[in-house]
Length: 153
Image (cartoon, rainbow, N blue to C red; front, side, top):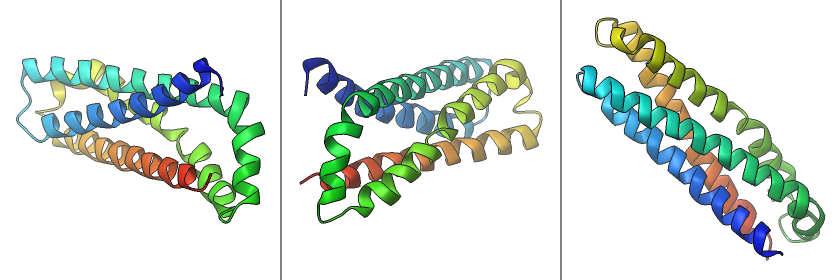
């Protein structure tokens, strides 16, 4: 594996984890009373979380196309756990697509409706629910990545 691909894979992992952490922080802020200072914080956290998911998507996609498909996938499919690719990786590839769009949606919500969050409990509850979904899906993506990596042996 080339130097670039190694660091893209490492970047994919750490940038994805950063996105999860940022949206966990969004969730924690949303659970408090929202004032102007916290709206600004929510905007920054969600924007950086969105950027993290997009960068993770790009770096992971490049790694997949350039290396995983030709080198790693055949090892997994020929190993003891071929289902790790057939089920886990295929699910991961499709479920992950939801994350950047959900992150963008909540980021736009904070930029356009941020000043209404505390007054409108429906907006706040929706933002909390979407943040929970993002954190759960992000965590599942990380766990699925660990399972796939373990199947390479």
